Image: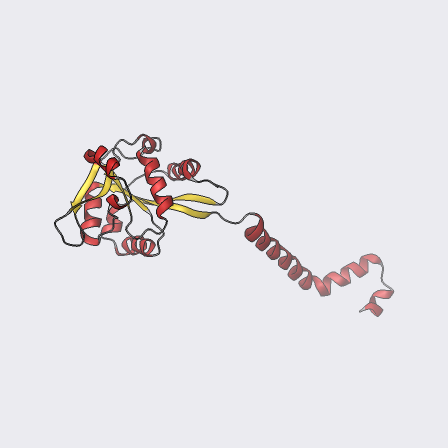
Length: 213
């Protein structure tokens, strides 16, 4: 190669090099871009981890409202919003979760993977999820008896999912909640509860209390 290039002009050498080695040049550029992407993603600007997640069932909210809801909750409860975020998951049609195979599978797959911590839904949906699947956590295990007594009119009580006759508070009424109304939340009766298998207990409880304050 060097023998051929010895008697060439600079322009000819450049053309010769490009003709035979542009594939290597492209490969090197792609490799550099890929390495830069990895460095940026892993070390400089890694994606934020989930602080807690909340599923909104049967809430015909615009994407901008859903995004704004997540941003506002992140600002309010997350100590380090650069590393963690509150993730809202919108299931527009409740019937998809309850009856549609694809929608139901997606919802329960997220629950099984511990990717849903809180659920906001209307009262019939809450009753369906609890009766059919025992989806919600007994709130008396995470909220004080004083708090439960002060808010007894808002509690959604059902019989224990273990089949006993004990009355258990599984959710709290958030109808007319000022925070949710900012984001054009539906005006019908809605309640909020903690998913039974949530693994982010401290974060989830903090988010729940933010809703209820």
